[in-house]
Length: 492
Ligand SMILES: [Zn+2]
Ligand SMILES: [Zn+2]
Image (cartoon, rainbow, N blue to C red; front, side, top):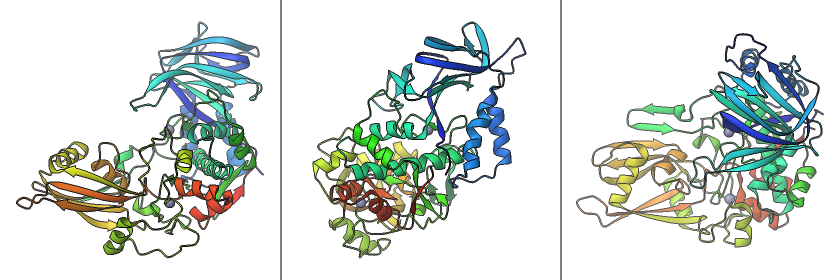
């Protein structure tokens, strides 16, 4: 068994960072000592060397060696321990010409290492939360573990170095409701841990690609999918881009701690690799497969299936007639529920109005739809004549849709691009059928989309999993229902 790894979480990015240390922290760092400043943070050199020497694999099951190596190699850079003494209390670090200015001295990097993760904590001031959301604001946040300060993009980055299990306790506490069943929380703990450890292994190997470079364009087709950009100097960020992490700002609940402890070190694996354990809000009754949402790779553990244990028959939803019948009816499935007590377990800031996402409807007037599509896609199609389903995946989700306009006709995909193009934010899903009405000279006055599910529908269905937990199914039954060929493996 390997040792529990530590995760580096990028928390705060600013020219000036203020924090206070509650407890005694050991300082290590690399002082500049009057040497010429090249402005290059030390971590960057290490990362570059690593990325050349290691083979570019993502999500490989980590050997004991590779897990232990990473923190040590990055830590060993601080050969010049600047002091053995410990500090506590209020601290200010300021970006200054490629360096960190702290207590009148310049450093290339600084670490404030806690002596005891359970007892020591530090508070970071003015952490931005909800980046790019309407509720974006700043608040002070408290963290366990150590604090690294590095130079990045002409400012400072505050990185929290913390045990994986400590990190997961915080993440599950802020993403899940404390009213969730223990088995649902345990299932989520295994998924979050799998995601994190696969990410840490791949983090420095993965090229940083802009998210919409994943495109396959040909005449009349614009097929695009979105992957999360990897971070260079830390494993994950604290925002929704990775997983929302607020340290111990909000107290964790006993049931979350119990779920983390009960599944300590457990991940989903397939053929010795950690699974890409994707999940979404509601599959709509059938699982989507990976290749219809992202890169054209088929993962055997993300396979089509009915979201049910007793109803196993699943029609071929890639066929238009079958998809239409499926979407216009409300077949039996775990996630076919409107029970508020269950929905509130998985929906953050749960809105009482939105209970109708197993099957939903959206209606647009012609002017609304044509200006929406122009605004969202940047393409002027003119008036919209038709939205034609071209290709559907295994859950009935469209991954190719033809937009027929008076000025332009084009096929777009994959599912997220379709959802972004047809809504101010995101359409619930791309599993929909289209009804046109009040045609004048071949131009419909209204379009009604009737749809199924919420999100991409690949992997675990959160609403379905919540129902399974309520019905008394154990977390391994839940996980192996949604990730069929996978197994649960204890790494530490
Ligand atoms: Zn991130
Ligand atoms: Zn479902």
